[in-house]
Image 1 (cartoon, rainbow, N blue to C red):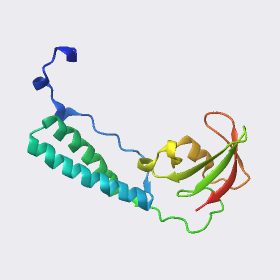
Image 2 (image 1 turned 180 degrees about the vertical axis):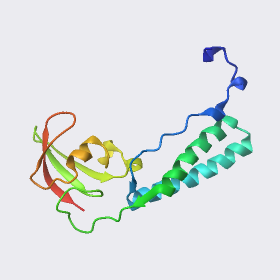
Image 3 (image 1 turned 60 degrees about the horizontal axis):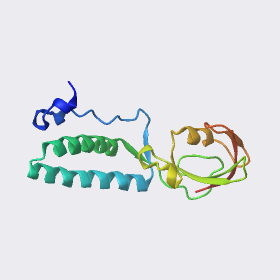
Length: 156
């Protein structure tokens, strides 16, 4: 039946699909762990408010998100920050690459939940990070979207 013909009171929001959990190890930076803790605390407060307001839709949504972030917190494996420049690209490294058009891009390799490509934060399991990990300064890598890039710098 189309949702257009279902009364809001007839909808069962307790059957929201679970947020998928990555099959990869949950590597996080110390900042990533802080972000996860903040998510859990914020959602716990939001859940209390939703319950107090009797908002069953919000309770279902927040409960689902809280289950996700609680699981991510329990599976987090904090990788300590690098103190010196590594010889090859690895988790936590800041990598500068030179593209074929002469532009440079800088990325930090971080955990999946920390990733924000627009801010230069790449998940360690992303295609670009996967192409970079294990490579050294001067190496050329094929980029998933096409073209090549040279690794110019690797910083802690």
